[in-house]
Length: 291
Image 1 (cartoon, rainbow, N blue to C red):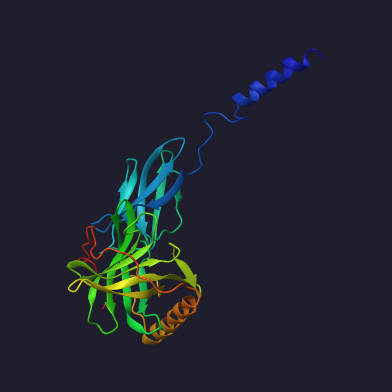
Image 2: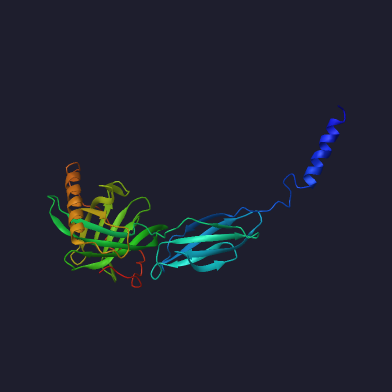
């Protein structure tokens, strides 16, 4: 029995030498670990896709695809690809990473998104529920404001008498949620500004909703009209056309919501918001604006 231990050690050594255990010569058949993320949009409307790829044997390259079409290849970390929000589609991106042994991993499909993107129906009402103004805002991109990302887009009213820039996010304070409409696309004076009641996007009938109080401003006379203000998201598409029936239905939903909320609110008061935007307005001229 004293020979058993040396015999077992000899057997294990022979098995290892013959490939019976895991050695440095064991084939590598495992692909890299891989994730795909996006940056916040820059002021020029560019989003950077970044593929985080790691592998014990090292990474040889990362390819970027859209709907199966090769867009570009990066061989040096960080592995990135720029997406132009103006000219490039926002959906169907994937990354494929190769290790130095030829193994590959592909990410799930990734869609580029921007803050609150899509069409929103908006309405401003007085204390009795009468509509003062309403229309559509389409948020197209994001812009950095006071260190925070704010949605930027274009709004118009139902009568097509106004067209200006719309912003939504922490505009005037980093801890609040506001929306602001400028007088026009080239005038930063405010036509309308409002603050969400609880500082966050809520839901109504399963749709994202902004509800709060604000003011319609007249810079010529330095006067303002206090209003209840709401926005309800219609879709998440940047260029989508919303049919009249859908708009009518959503208008009724939002107006009904504002009327119901008004019963539980204190007496209407004006919200102290700046009359002008002390921020750099986004250049939206490169984008396809909603018709």
